[in-house]
Length: 340
Ligand code: SF4
Image (tube, rainbow, N blue to C red; front, side):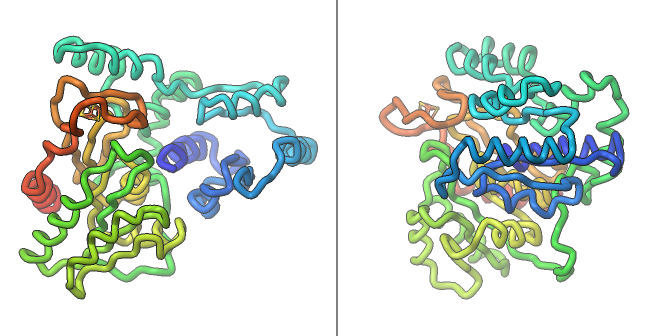
């Protein structure tokens, strides 16, 4: 989910570069369609309904039909996976550019030990640029147009001149002051313990009159831990909202606190500041927030990062990378960023 949101930066950049004469078809999985279907820079969304049993052959035929009706000039592979490679092979005669997701460099950094070597690889080989800037920088080098990033920022900027890539639902202009807590993540190791999110919510509620909304998916039952808070200012919407509804809620929030996950990327894409808590992954992978009022907490621990995506189970007796992030520290960082 986070990847799809981040890729919308490319759409904005291409439209900034070529204007609305350029026709963009965005291809994605059906479950992520709602992330991009109302994006002003995307002319058409084609989705593959893998979970609904759509056959790969039928999906390819759908795209072939499109190509016949309106010839495709260029394929940009923004996913860089085996599936996207398979898709590209079906259309081998169409020119294609593929994104470099720094997979090898990320893998390397999970294998080296020692702070100096890790810092060297992170700063000299991978770099600390955010994925949004990285994608645009890579493509603008290929397209040989170095005005593009500036133009993208000018075209779609957030309240503090950061790049935003999604547009709010204009129908709802009401100002909201709630904050969002997003305790979920694609992999368990990437989750800050839910009990700490609960303690954080209690701390915020006891010190401020701020409404808190908890957002998480239908399978994230661990969010029941919030039920112990009996306050009208807390709304636990875990499993109660569609992706589209969660996006709307996030877009009108004043702040979002979550893990290195899609919810924080969506929040940033709307220009809503966020605080990202990194566990087994590292900010140098490119997924740290880039907004001027956003920030992150990531502990210096010898075993971290232990995988490129956070998918591996912790091999130590407990997940120190997350456990060492205290409620007090998150609360203080939140206040610091909020008052920025
Ligand atoms: S404590 Fe170390 S090994 Fe365990 S999940 Fe965190 S980074 Fe990985």
